[in-house]
Length: 412
Image (tube, rainbow, N blue to C red; front, side, top):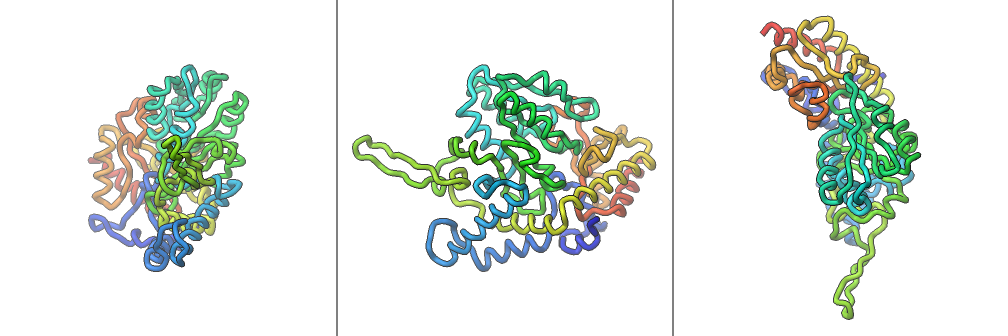
């Protein structure tokens, strides 16, 4: 097991006080805090290596290019991709999903084709498909969610057909922390000749992820949820699929040649090699450097240790909430081992925003609202929910303080 007290020494922000109380950060599903190692790596890049990549032969450009390419290699190893060609750097999970939607979906989906989406998806895995369906004319089928927030696999198996071209599913729900059986879904999808797009925003930071074991065709995740900086994320894609896909954006970096013909008065364009084919313009080089350090940090901690620590915190929190709080209701699965470190909850008679504001008075940060997953809240018949989410630097003592304030909210 990891030592959260030792880990906390690497996170400067955890020394801060909010409203004269020690900061307790339980909003890790939205974004994680950053260790000194990541902060120092970003600082060092701008102080020592800052230059554009793949555009010059001078020393700084060569150094920046090497750092940026190494970042792709490090991420590829982290998720067990076959190589850096399968790891495309984007702004985050949202852009990664949009890349698949526009580069794969827009060019290949047609009228009467079908895309399957579950009702537990983040809005970023719903909205792009709804937009494109109005352009391309394909149909969207939504897979039902059970009352406990788990996927209804019978609904999925009843929805899929030879018309299904893409199946979109979260590896872990950002509302409940439910871990979905992606391999089971992928097996069925591939039997029907469908591609599988996995939203890994809540899984890659919190448990061991091996893209070959998942058998996913695409996996999207964000750096800022896994100790890295904002503005950097990853789309993993099978190389053979990425080779056939059209680029998402046009500009510099993503081309090998642009040749003008005086006869046709047009330009012929040759795309660059992977992954640069999908990374138009000046990339977030510093973001890649920060993400590299974040990945190294998590590898040193051990992803299995991360998973076990979060499971222990979740079990402890849910047990204490049931034992000590009379008006608190936990949403989603009631078994902690069936989920990652996320606990959605409510207090009878109190809105989720009032819960969050009350907790904030004591320096405790939680999320409130729909969490960008309104359809799932409609399944639960909820106007909103509060959400506590844990990470490697959280402790049982923090949960004890959280429970104390929840009891005050009940009395209030």
